[in-house]
Image (cartoon, rainbow, N blue to C red; front, side, top):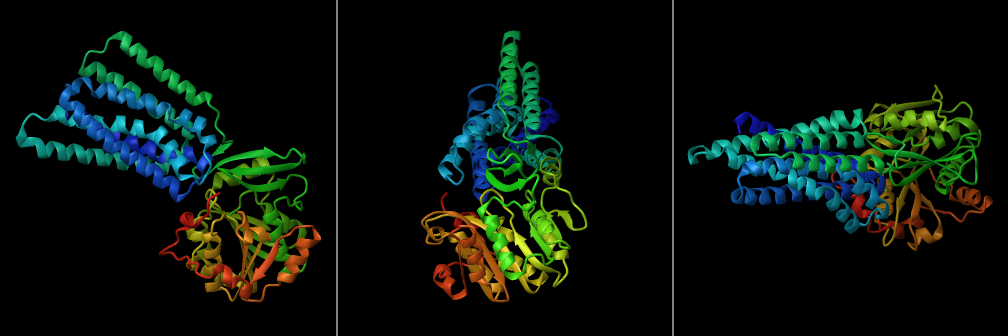
Length: 489
């Protein structure tokens, strides 16, 4: 094999492995969410595939002539890449988010073999290039460097360009098809490829491609950040539920923006109403948009209000405009990008209210939970302003909810939690509404609103919270293990 061709093969196979690794997060998200555990599992499984494939490829290269290995290994890697999506979409719905063993098994089923097959190519190429011991270090070093450059290329191109430009299904089909065709070409070039063998490979590859297309995607919108879909409420013709990855994120009534369905959203409104009289205009900053339920509610019931929504995903904003009737204006503005960056541009004492409702899977993104971020929230709030955040946690100890409450208490003079009694007592999991303010929080008014509509949510604040948050860690930019603190669903 010419040295230039050897370099191209090693570069391309390494790039393909990293394309597969980065796309895996997007492919797995609809079933297991985007969490630290998800990415840790993906990276670990792919590294195991690289290690195992390199080991096995080296062993095979010593037993068989490398010329007969390289083409078939590439073809195998391409076919296994093509069946990655059918495996995830078939097995994924049975995996419960948060179950690490099931997550690991799903990831291994989808990624281990294609990563191993593609990684087995490099040792065979190295063996084919070695002609003298005097050049061993040079050849191995050059090819290893080209493999690393290929991995970097695959990483940057996928993360910066491909994910934003094309659906994951299309990228995977293109990648698998390219690997199969390149493998067949090398098979014919390096060794004898008979027509029946080529035809058989083509049939198998076409079958893998067909399966990829045939197994339906759960996404109506697949962006760089979310798999989004809309579910119609069977009991309310105008009701729509926005699902982001694994989470029912927002409920929107297309005809009545004042209709609030989810209990946590009603609790958010109870908190707001306890501080600001009904009808009083507000300046509100929303961390996370989703279906934009609360900004639209505030616009409808508090004329003259102004809301700025910091939403990560611009494609999601367009999707909500098209499917859920979002209309932006001077009264309801959207800024796309990371909220941690966006809040830095906000003026001091600019808002009466800051609402936190951003999720990555079941967890709030860790960098939106820390003391440093909450200090920025406190900075942009006016005297008497309120920070209210929605989060989810579960038994056995509700470590994340208690840690976030403890973190709020580091910044604000008064902190409250609004949650059903059985959830507060760690009997079950669910949504927690946490409140921070430098003015006393009227828990009696919050309780009264909940009881008026028949809910059992109870607000607890300050001294009543001390036993609950005792021993909880304060989350900081240095240490915020949100995914590990989250209880078991």
